[in-house]
Amino acid sequence: MEYSLLGPSGIRVSRICLGTATFGVAPAAADATRLVHAALDRGINFVDTANSYGHLAHFDRPGAPPSAAREPAEELVGRALRGRRDEVVLATKAGEPVGPGAGDRGLSRRHLFRQLEASLRRLRTDHVDLYYAHHPDPDTPLDQTLRAFDDMVRQGKVRHAALSTYPAWQLTHALWIGSDLRLDPPVCAQVRYNLVDRAVEREIVPAAQRFGLSLVAFSPLSGGLLAGEDAASREYAGERRWGGKGYSARQREAAGRLSALAREWGRPPERLALAWLLARPGVASAIVGPETPAELDASVAAAGLALTPEQVAALDAIGESGRDLVEPVRRSAR
Image (cartoon, rainbow, N blue to C red; front, top):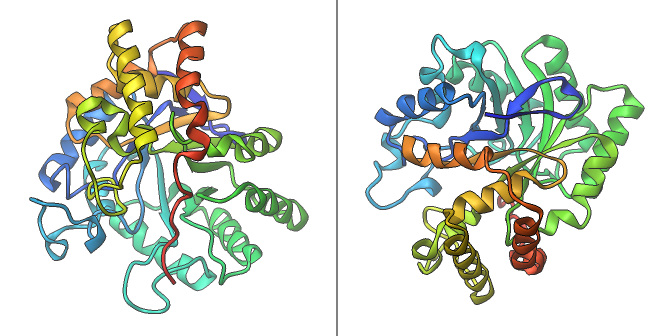
C-alpha cells in the first residue's frame, strides 16, 4: 500500500480509504468487523464514517434490515477498531440531518459539539483524527463553524478539521477566515471525483493546490457505473448509490468505452478507473465502499497499478466530457 501526506497535517494516509456509509446495510453488521480488519491487514490506515451513516431510513435497500433495527455505522466502526484504534486515521462528519428536530442538523456550534460527543461515544475513542463539515450550512456563519472546530482541536478531541462537498469559493473563504482569526485550518477537502465527473477540475483542484489542501475523493466509480458493463447497463431510480441514481446515455457510453479499453488492456475497468483517479493532481486518497474482502482486494490492487502515459491519455479522452455529465452534489433539505 502506498501513502500520501494529508495536506499540511503531517499525517500519511493510505491511497485507499475505507468508506462505511452502508455499514449495517451492506456489509451486514456481522461482517463489518471482518471487513475493517481486512482493510487494516492490507495496509489501509484511513477509515471514513459519519454520524448519519448506516442507520437512517434513506440508507434502506431491498434485503437489508429495517432502519430501526440497524446500528449506526459509527457503532460498528468503534466495535471493529477495539484494540486497533492506534492503527487508524479516523475521520467522521457532522452536518447532515440525524433526526426530525429543527436542531438535528447543520453546523452550528451547539450542534457540532453535541454531535462530536455522540460520535466519540459510538466510536469508543477520545478523539477523531479528522472532523468534517459534511456539507455547507447556509444558516450558520462560516466563522462560527471554524471557531468550533478550532476549539475542538485545542481540547484534543479533534486532531484536524476538514470540509466536504464545499465549492472552491467557500474553501478559499474558510482558509482566509482561518488565517485572519488564527484558527487551526482545514487540511483536506472531500469531493465527488471520478472519470465521468470531473467538475472539481474547474476550480476546486486549482484552489486546493494553491492553498496546500489535499483532496479525498468519494464515489470513485460513480456509484458502480465504472465497475463494468453489467453495472453500467443497470437502470436505477432514486438519489443514492444503493437505491441508485439514474445514469444518462452519455454516462453509460463513457462506461462502455472504459470497458472496451479494459478488455483491450486485460485489466478490470474498476481498477483502471481507480488508478486513473489516484494519479490525478492533489488526490491523496479515494474512498471505496467494498462489501467483501474480495472487493477490497480489487481496490488495493488499483492503488498499486501504474498506468503508462498512453493509458492515462486514453482514459482522459473518455472522461474529458465528464466535467458536465453529473449534477452537483445534492444538499440536505432544511
